[in-house]
Image (cartoon, rainbow over all chains, first blue to last red; front, side, top):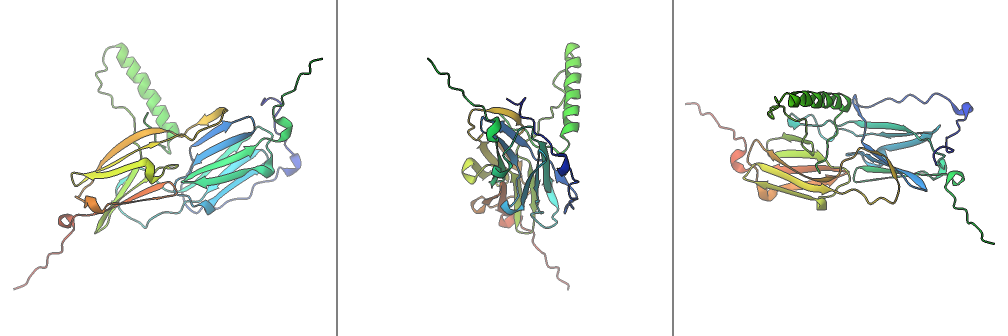
Length: 133
Length: 150
């Protein structure tokens, strides 16, 4: 299925991505699950502590990028135990499927981002009915 | 199944743990491994703990979970237990290209440095972050002693 679904890159759109300033020094790579079904690709990303308005999902040139801002949740405190850090999240995936970019949808629930990437009609597997004479 | 925890230095850790496995295998073959090598398993969930004058706070990142999936209790005055299960969302038929997120049940017990008032412990869940506020018991609160001058 994937063989004929290579995204054709449009050379004219190969422009440099805008530089992003990062508010915090540390950027974390979120853990992700990717599920492919007949109709779509689904990305689940763990983004604990991120407010729904602070996620930026972009799809450009066959690359899906997830940026999420996560501000420090409390003032400077002296930790008795500190086992994880808090910071922004960033992760990008090359999506090697023909994706219907207009129909990409994302939702954030309980700190988990779900991105739906519907496949374009052209590459969806089609079942051909065999006629009997 | 115990979930694995997100480590920012995954690459390094996996290298280390692979190295350790190699070493264990080497020592196994010589019959030298008497369980003296610690495992690199990490406790889940990762917890940050801090305190102020009145409260002890514990915070854990548990994305995709809600308070209904969790059991939180304090026993013996200073043993905080976080128990729960992270369920995998039901997936339609498909192919997993990547599975990095862990699922399953877990339990973690944390010893707090001071006794807390178990009846007044509050837990809040916001955007996948669990925050537990535990008021210190009266006897554990810092008391200012006035020094009398004669």
